[in-house]
Image 1: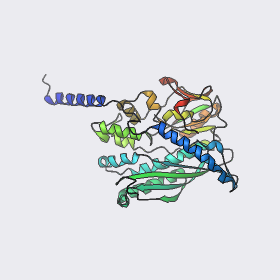
Image 2: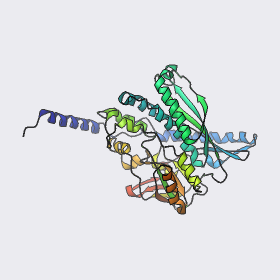
Image 3: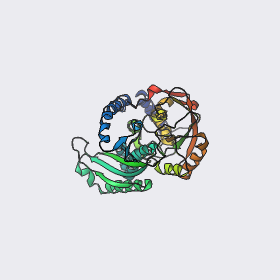
Image 4: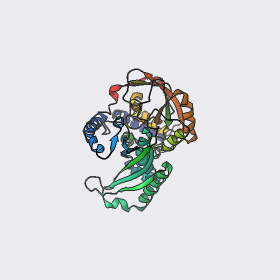
Length: 389
């Protein structure tokens, strides 16, 4: 049988690509320009300075809930009403949308609008707050950025749709043109969210206890964390963002699947009469975030949810050891609820009724502060997550 030259050429090309990929070595967060040790140290220093400003509240008849410092949202008692607030930014996902537009023909700014709001709203609900209003911050490299009619229509429409999904008012915001600060043709997207915490629903971790169940909620994909790693990978893939992943989709389009808005799930959980003892939005730091609570507990995970194809692709192609993948990315679980064992299955049902897959994946145990993921033989120790002053 005669084998054509094209067959040999194809195999040789694939071999060259594989040799090139391996010769460049693995990609990690530090090589992608993100060093959490440095960032977290600044956060801790800022918390130390911020504590001294709490004295200003007393003169206004208000007080902070001190335990909320270091949590995902800050809570203040305003004359008997608990008000929570948070500010979050999208990060570099807009760069992916800009690059993929040439492939897909879509701006994708409708979906990254949802990502931006999700970053803030998903943090706010961890403390038991109902989101009330959102403010937008869209900072462009120049006023020319706002002249792209299709992109602006998609951004506005997507922002409005995400607000409607979470039943929050879009109050306004800021649209500065920051030449010399933001690069030309680029934008920095961020959101501030404010909400109120009804009586009896505060979840700052006082009720977390050994024996509580860990319920994980499904992620839609990479969400908006780990995008710097994904961008670095796209630079070395032969097809870049057009490379096909395991489910046949282009890598870039899979990266742009919008972050799940977990506010409707929490509303369903609360409506079922369940008040979580603690909640965690699994973003940067990956599953290390499961030990965000400052107490001495061991979080033992006995099963892991399925990984979205885009995360399987990232883990394989970067490549990442499982400990780094689960310590940096959501790996299929975007949110964690800690509830009494008796309410675990009801929590899962409430989430699924709200349209999001959920699983009872482990339990809280007495012991040193650490996360143990038994099926993967991974353990994260207390020193692997330092977010508090």
